[in-house]
Image (cartoon, rainbow, N blue to C red; front, side, top):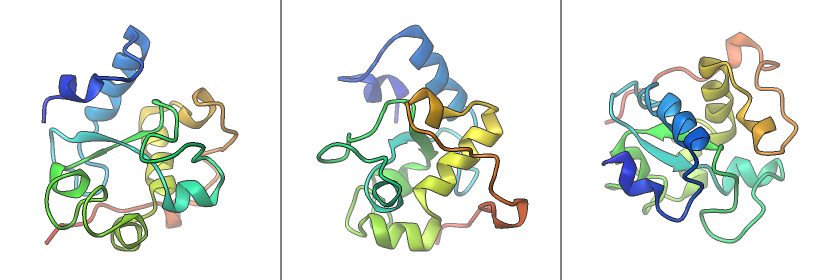
Length: 136
């Protein structure tokens, strides 16, 4: 999916585009596959920490995106925005909060703080950090 297609109705400032480019360059945060789509985290673990503030899937700041392979984001039976639901997806692939923390660590940027949410993504012990998973 072309990143430009995902930029409608969101903050399209050069600063935000640069952030999304850095996140997309990581590849899928779950599988490591290149050319991910960007998923705005929502529901599930995001709601559990009080960071989901709106209705629907766009209840968080545009900084809070994780790179996902299309089949894990919006295409197919394993997609978080598809039939499995957020809670089941998080049980299979890791919580969105943990994956967002990993994005912060890999980019060296605290996107939580940029979104106005106090959270330290570096405080999680290394042994508990998400590992790449294979999609079957």
